[in-house]
Image: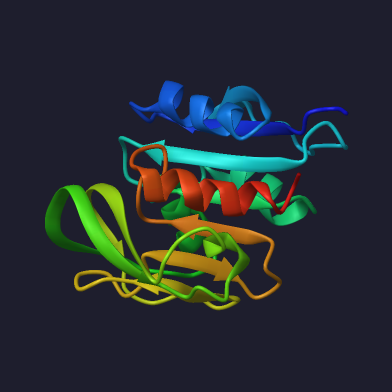
Length: 187
């Protein structure tokens, strides 16, 4: 049986090795490109696309234009993590706002009927390293997880193909189990 291939777009995260290791633990082969080098199409080479977090703000829509075109034009599942979710949300018309700095494990309530959360309980503890938050889902998306400081901790497109996570899922056990739920969409 052939392993699924996942294209990991590195938006400058400090935790790329951990993210790739988690996806590989779940049975995928991974290839990595940076945001400036994304292919125009996946053309059957990849079964999913994962956008990493970013050290810079996701506001530079010109820079991220090719990445947004890939995400919106592909038919494979997409998961944006931290800055990756913010890039997707901003491109869809969302707004980010400053909020309290959160670093470490934080509780989030998730909609367990969502396939992304098939392996977790209604309250998960996920890793945060943030000060920017999405306050409402942009058109074409809805919030599927929330916390005290962020009404959109997790995001899903109306067609169910694109997901976003404010948290860094490459850390903590609940993060791994949420990645497992994502892997079920392309396995």
